Image (cartoon, rainbow, N blue to C red; front, top):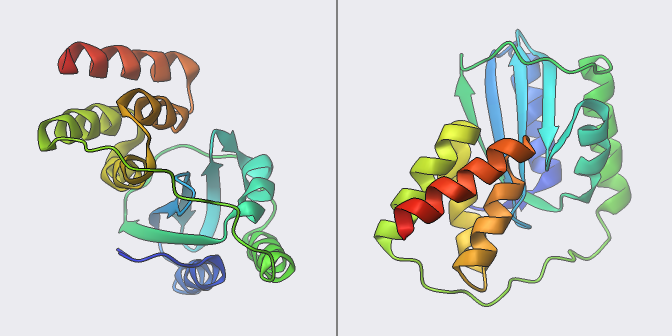
Length: 180
């Protein structure tokens, strides 16, 4: 796990290294703008991309907005999820080109004031969120809770990380029921 945020160009280079090593697993990315990405690699080939409620080529294109991120690669953790994508080499080149074009731009993310989330609240939120987005939930929770104005705003942002609108609503309902 990369604990600190890195320039996204470094994350792209690490993705390139995983592909060269013919790695199989899931790469979870969390941006400094409180958004998440997920890539699935099978024997070094990128077969699935998700970013901020987008999939496939749309997600790849949207990743151009990422300035800084941290990541975690879970070896062997794959699913049957697939998205229509160009070849892995083209994906890597696209990500590298995007970062070259945006490297001189300022980061538009401005951290918002923070509210205090209790350990109990955090535990409930992380557990519920993990049911919908998996092991990246603690990372996403940490990032969003650091910059949320209040609990409702944090929960809304976290729900946006769930690809299915129906599941996002269910997440909100579950958390609110447990938190009272």
